[in-house]
Image (tube, rainbow, N blue to C red):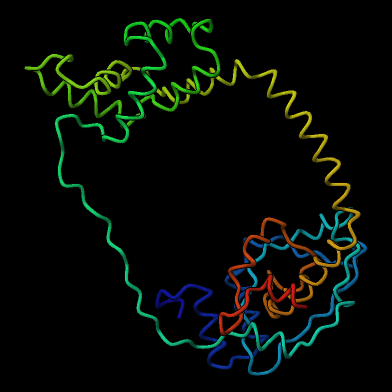
Length: 306
């Protein structure tokens, strides 16, 4: 199969379909480095962790997978996962399997909406919506194009404070708009710049400011630096207190323990994702995507009902 261009994982799948022995499949995977990018195998007992007992899935049942990213065993000690023991969770395994097994569904006709195509270009190449927003901003800015160029070149903070920079950032041309303005106006060699709309002239005036948005953001950062530092320091203290609360929250530990029990049940037989001692907390956002076979209940809803 490898000579036919089938990759390692595809070949392993065919071997399982053909009923090959597990030892033969494991030897094949090892030979062809099927899981070469996986982390080095670590014995949980050598790290002072209890050996987990896998909960097998009933015969003939194929479970949906919970695609979490297991926490490295070396990072379990000292974390919230260290004291969690999902063996204390009692639940109806058959009921759970019936809800989260893989079943064939009837095909659903999907109608894909096609994007609408613009009717055509107009002489003033900036859209009406964009033009309206920029015109309002220019009125509040109260600077003509040449004055604005001078202020930006000199980084005059008496004129450009944080609020003014924030307003300018909203209406400043993007790199694409700068390129378009230069191209459109320079190609119209028989016309003067004043023949174009106010917004088009504004974009053309700033077309030679490279990375304009990034430079404006950096200027705002410079002016806001001390305020940002004070804010981050307060956030750091708040996060530290929150971490202490989370680490000592009994209800959260119980919830994570239940999720470990259910997730390891669903991922039974999966070398990388199964028999996990913990998982990355951002993976919690994936849970609503997992639904029961009939689509009536999501994984978090099942947890709540449990």
